[in-house]
Length: 137
Image 1 (cartoon, rainbow, N blue to C red):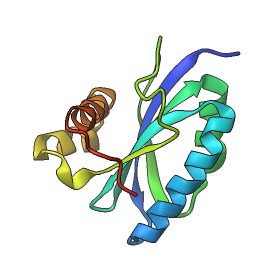
Image 2 (tube, rainbow, N blue to C red):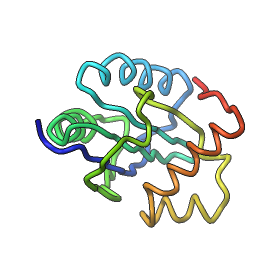
Image 3 (cartoon, one colour):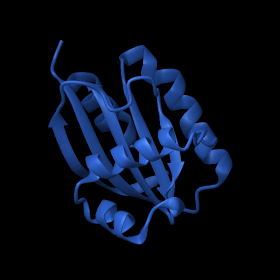
């Protein structure tokens, strides 16, 4: 088994992403990810995706390179950060979800620039937990 990592990336939607498409993306992730030990969080809004994937490095890299990077629903995939982790930020989430329209402008700008992506996504998770916000979709 390889090391436990967290990989955060951003991308832009190829076309307008409808809610049905997001539901399908999440359904597939929530079915597949537990089988390979991957957890994480997906953010979407204003035509931009931000996602953090956690798990065994080989499994995360395989999902990212073989599926995510080849998905034609988005383009401009850029890794914002990758780091080895001791424990997961999202241990029980096969794939959490949140719209980015709830982010403060500064947080959205920092995510888009790639600054502190892991910390910002972690703060969003904490906010959701503190305020009992259910994951939509």
